[in-house]
Length: 281
Image 1 (spheres, rainbow, N blue to C red):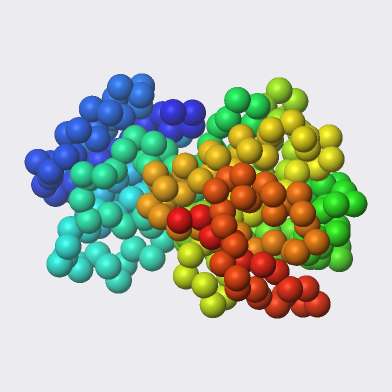
Image 2 (cartoon, one colour; image 1 turned 120 degrees about the horizontal axis):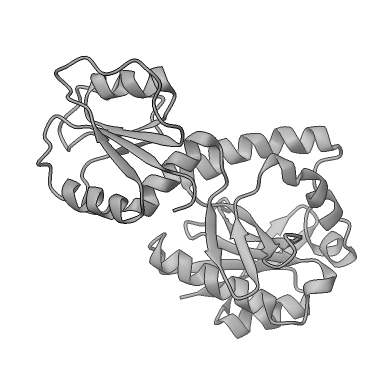
């Protein structure tokens, strides 16, 4: 746990299944726990910083709004009493059996617009993009090989910033996945990007990656993509992934095959290019 320090619970049924397990896990991560009685007025004075709220009633919702903590709405299946009044929640859950301390932390980060750490490898951190990354992003896309096979960024940094702001809110915020930054663990430099995207006409997600020239031919791409394939299976619950590669991009074809992707014989037209579809079963 890195950011969340306090968690407020305002639950009508404190004996809700697995709630005790979640509270125990949060406590073990040194998160201080507070309970609010949903039938009594809540305190209106200052509350600790770095707080988040979990609730199944309007008392807790109003508490979270008053103190701007953000909140996770517990709405058991079949219960709709809150559904039309909680459009500002980070997440709606139907139970606590799959809710972990890490998940609560991520909802807290989403409220604070803090980037999620997706995975950590021996040499890299894979995390969500932030608007502070725009300058580094433009420098990355000046790489000759990236220019050759990857669509460019928007013409100006202002346009790209607006696009990425919407991407963070809609793609990361709604789907929970996207194209992420690959960061050098030692220096903090932007090494490249990698992640998953949706391609029209295909139900399976597409794995993509790019690295700037100083980081190629060192096994870093294998390190990153192996971690993301594991993330796709273990976290996103995916069994199949696509890769779409330009036929002239022989290094990427060889690399995809090394990861276990095989050509399907299909291709898609993207602008003036035909891309070959590979699949990882």
